[in-house]
Length: 504
Image 1 (cartoon, one colour):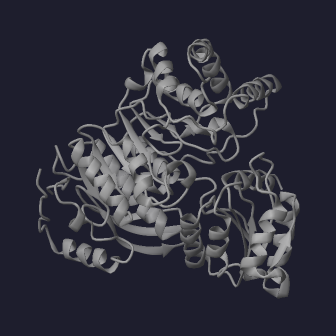
Image 2: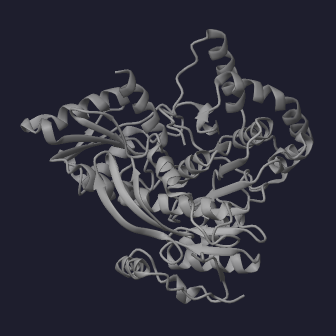
Image 3: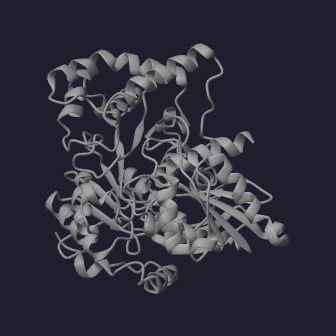
């Protein structure tokens, strides 16, 4: 296999090259480590509303959903894993291989997976494909994890799907050394629901890693790898390169790989994997990327370079440079899904692309849920995610006074998260969510005091008290108009805060 050289199309390519060069501190020159890889180079939805479902109004349905959740919670949780796809493969076998009834786009990485998956879904919907999307974790309701055409399946359908596959789950449980886990059963439900719908395409986000993740019983024609950084180091590895080794397991024979900007060691691993399986590679900053980005009211205005050409006038109703990069990755993934850059030397219809991106939402990711003062929710839970969130908040809002509400999970690099936010938080209120995995507020406070100093830390173990305290702090010193609150540290914390603030 040989590396194709860039083709000179027009002056816009020179502009793109200049932007790539200006971002060299963020995007290592992957060309020097891409020797031997085959590069993909082109020749050339409806509004979703609030995607977080409310509690079912029918008492019987609500009770049935609670019973299913209780049964699922009795299984291994998502943090207890036995690295194998043996059980999920056995379940797929007895279900008749539902995951092979539709083509898939498989999304892995460390940060940005859910937002990127939502953007991919919106694009596919806009081009009139019926989609299934499987993402995790959920913000408020477990039903969010399984979506059809951009909307979570109903509680009724969730319960029905569970009971449909339950006999097969029990059959597999009886034959295996370990019972199917919570995540494995949900994955089976998603694949079965998508086959039953049926969908034209599925967008599948890995739960953790890649090779032995329960989702990895599909042979996706397009594999997406969002930026890799350190998270779940006890299971995936202690360096980006080691983590990439596990995440690269989603890259299948002859697939197209869409690579977001990566650390050099992670890129080397992923490109080597692509060579081994004769996969085609498209790299952000090389074959596609963000050409221009301007802050706009309610989001940002973008020009993206895709595999098939340039797409201008794109409004993305989301904040932060990282969301723009997610959009570029999503666009390239959908182009590759449609064969653009390989089979076709053309671009997608730009008006349809604009319509799709304008409809994108991502709950709990730079989401404004209240004004006066402004309250922003973001599920950053590792240092890399916290850094890009801090940059995005600073750029998009310019608060004169920002107060943080942080609730984290046990086992996370909370010091790294707090250090990322320290420059932008005037004060921080540490708290805890209701999950059994929540880090006790007092333990989190001890780390926060070391990072912020005792005068800038307040402890409120109850999340509702923490939100009230943060809003009060934000309004002090007559800075009401320029004050803000950022709730972060965990998807669970953000989800519970979202429920409290939406109902308040």
